[in-house]
Amino acid sequence: MICNYCNTRPPCLIRQFTGRHCCKECFLDNFVSEIHETIVQYDMINNNDRVCVGVSGGKDSSVLIDILYNIKVTYGYSWQLFLLAIDEGIKGYRDDSLAVVQHIKDKYNLPLEVLSFKHSFGRDMDEIVIKTGSKNNCTVCGVYRRNLLNQGGKFIQANKICTGHNADDVAETLLLNLFRGDSLKLVQQSSLLNNVDGITRIKPLFKCAQKEIVLYARYANIEYFSTECKYLKDAYRGKMRDFINRLQITNPRLVINLVNSSLQYGSSKSIESVEIDANRSKCENCGSLADGRLCKMCQITEKLNNTL
Image 1: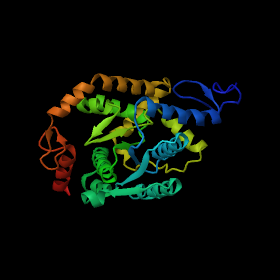
Image 2: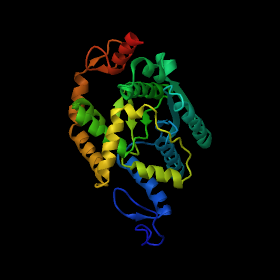
Image 3: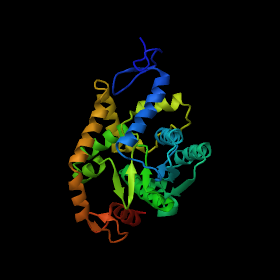
Image 4: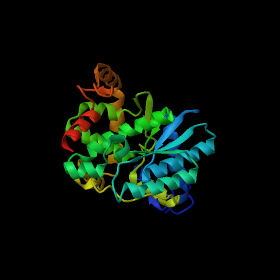
């Protein structure tokens, strides 16, 4: 048996979404090329863009910044790359992963900003969980993280915010919104390029299998923090991840099929999404788009203020 790409070397893996046998060398080359093609095909990054890359020290963002940096150097693009990390205040998790973020900063010689829940909102996730329990942790954390990503992007004066969401993440989010019956989020999060307050959010890894991201990190000798958040086990997303993993045993293309379905849905509903945003009101507190008196972040903050 030989590699289906070079027809020379013995294979070391089978590509998850295509079933093709692939050697290490061809995998490294093709993985980067596929992400480059995604960036070009969907017009994600243009010359002179200021790109704020969300980094956590985990596998996805560590691989993302490595590939973006190498594509920029290889093709002579004039992107400007900036690193932004969010410190949620989770002891034994985020404090350790930020050491990897510092390593990334030094390795690629890129500017880094770190924003914390404690400094921005007056409380960290550990405090929130102690006071409110384990329910809805990921919702609170996700809303706060997205807010700080946008704040950081504005501070850096970026016009693009780039995150390491992979195909598995996209599939999980699609099913979460379907199972919750959240049609608004289904429309918004199925759109490939989302514009929030003048900054476009992009996901160059959205067609990449999580397992292949891990393999790329291993073969390319990329350091990353591998411990999962200690609160994930109580989250609905964690259960959805387990559900998808079980189904993938008999259907290896399940994730990419869900990603393609999400793309088709987002494309067909793009006009509706614009109309929904146009008809939404402004949050009384912060001025962001809202479905009622307050936006989601201010609703959560108000509830926490009454609880803590």
